[in-house]
Amino acid sequence: MNKLSQAIDYIEQGEIEEGLKLLNACVQEGTDEEKYNIARYYHTLGFVEQALKVTEELRMRYETESELTLFLAELYTDLDREDEAIEVLGEVTEDDDLYVQTLLTLADLYQMQGLEEVAEQKLLMARRLMPDESVIAFGLGELYSGRGSYAEAVPYYREVLAEHDDIAGVNISLRLAECLSALGQWEEAVLYYESGLQEQRDIHSLFGYAFTLYQAALYERAIAAFLEVKQEDPEYASLYLYLAECYDKEGLFQESYDTLREGLKTDEYSADLHVQVAEAAAKLSRIDEAQLELEQAIAIDPSHLRAALQLIHLFKQQEKYEEVIEIAADAIKYGEDDPQLIWETAYAKKQLELYSDALNHYRDAYTSFKDDSSFLEEYGYFLLEEGLRKEAKDVFQRLLQLDPTQVQIEELLYNLEDLQ
Image 1 (tube, helix red, strand yellow):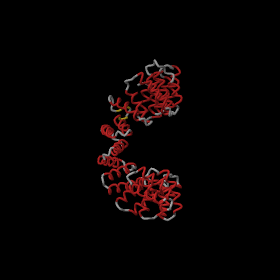
Image 2: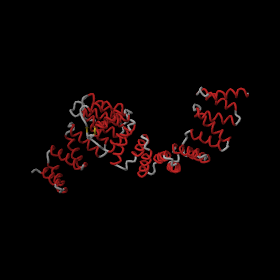
Image 3: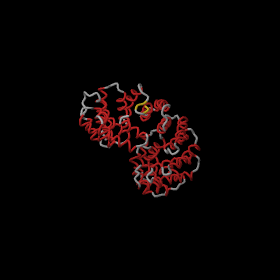
Image 4: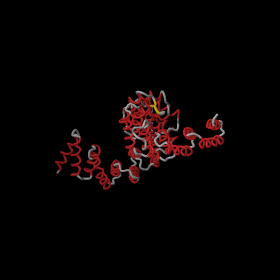
């Protein structure tokens, strides 16, 4: 047994210190080929600095050996020295047998540095040199899908899938399913998810499959898929909102409510979950509970528009107009600028007979709601009640332009003309 084999034997038997000491001796005494093998073995063991030292010495003598250059670049990359990796790879010439592999490695490095356009150029150059190489098509698919260019990624994944089910541990059917789902091609995405999940059933892909079924309005199947996600990982907080929504679409309101309650146990500080619990509670006529949940949502996120508007709706039903004004004011204070809040404030102040303030708010809201028939009708009648007939007439004329079928408004305008 030579020294290198003996060193490896020591290490594999757990005598690490003795083995490394013998490896070091082999580096001093061995041939260049043996030194290269030792560097590879150092790398396998995780001793990257030792591997680098040996490899750098070898490359000084074999600068044109591209295999050595690629390995050196890999070591630099492992040590977060990407710039040096790119520099040495740049010395590999186009006539080298490993030039395409060099381009692929460069593409990975440029992606790591966020230089996606340069990475794309390297991959396309490799594609021109080897147009039928699946690894290159896969690299382009990964590049495009990684930056959200799903339509560009899909053809490359389709090409790869014609030859390979997976590359580098990546299931191509699942990648393709993710891209198609992101493009809104739900039905086709479902088919690829089902194919891919037969080979690889990870939690991320299961959730993607369930979400795609939900988007495709296949709620019964989505429920089964989300329940599998829940069984695999009850802490997967995102599933509860969608599972509850699926139950709701199927008319299973109690199941929807119970699911959201479970979701709150995994993410009690989710304002969105509290809002959905409130909505589910309201459907079960639990109005007090709905109010408490909406107040909790606003306590978590004071600018949460959906929570504010839902709570305003409840308070309007109960004729609690001071509370309506307070909720709207707080939402605006914390940065929410939705004009609906102005409209709701105007209505509440009108109900409280704060007519001057109400008028100002209605006027502020008009710009945003001048094409909303409901707003125009409410605003027009308010102006009429305030004796502002000319303004009321203008608003009603606008309303009639939008909806000529409102005969009562036409009659009202006719009467206003007579009164002038």
